[in-house]
Amino acid sequence: MQVKDEDVFALIEALGAHFRANLFNRYLRQALLTLTIDRATWSLIEQVTEKSEYYRLQGYHLDELYDRVLALARFVYAARREVQPHLRSLLARQGSPAGITLSGNDRVLREMSVNNFASNLNILADMIDKLYQKVAEIDRSQARGAMPAYARIRELQELGRYLVPK
Image 1 (tube, rainbow, N blue to C red):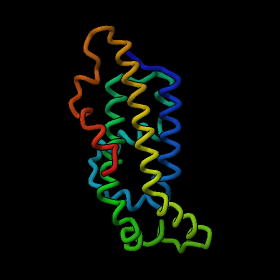
Image 2: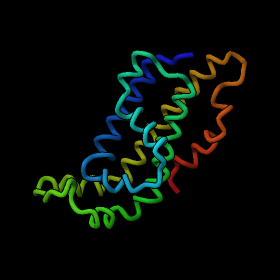
Image 3: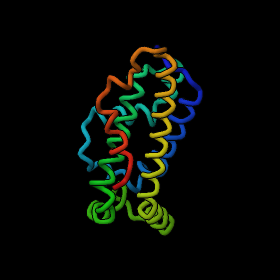
Image 4: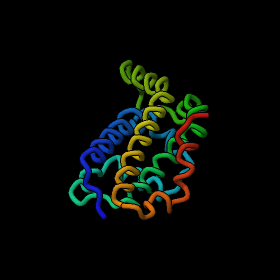
């Protein structure tokens, strides 16, 4: 069954905009690419944060939505553990984005990105949780007494651990 719920699309679009502007921007991207996340997970993240318009036309399968929720949750978990504690040193080692010298404005924007990294990860985690809750609600209503799709995906039981900071 295809999910074509406007609330789901709105959540995905807001989540993608937040991800691109506040986390995967030109100031932080190089540090985030050091995460130990497999290619399949990166691909799912890209699909949900950058290609939502394609899915607006055809809709999402529930399993596809849960896969994307889990990929984003894995990203948050890995970013908190691997990047957040060392963000400044990672960026200092890698230099400026694309090897260019940062101007005054760019320096300020990069500093803002670094200073707000933890807050922006928390906002992303909240958005992922809202998306999951909405999709699970749709899943339960479509299941009509049968087992909902989320109950068959064991890793979804880890979602809270992935999204809640230690």
